[in-house]
Length: 137
Image (cartoon, rainbow, N blue to C red):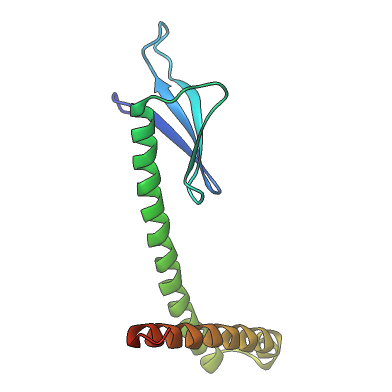
């Protein structure tokens, strides 16, 4: 572990994080992590842990982490979609080149329904964007 630890540690969870203040300035020079807050990124909530009062520095650090986390999650979302496009192409190639009749029987209906659903949503969203661009909301 490096010699310089951060002042805060964020234990990531489903919708945010538990926030800890990191302390190494104790008599035993042990790393102590004191939970100070719970963060919900989706709701934009910062809740002090227990009866704690968060300092302006605490809030500033937590808000900066929330902004960085939101940006990271958005980047991951679009990356996942680009990977899905790649995976659709790989699936098409697999179907064309090596899928057996039994394998196709197993996946065809599910793929057709998922693709139909996806296409319907994409077409509707594209039409909405075009109408909005023309001012036809």
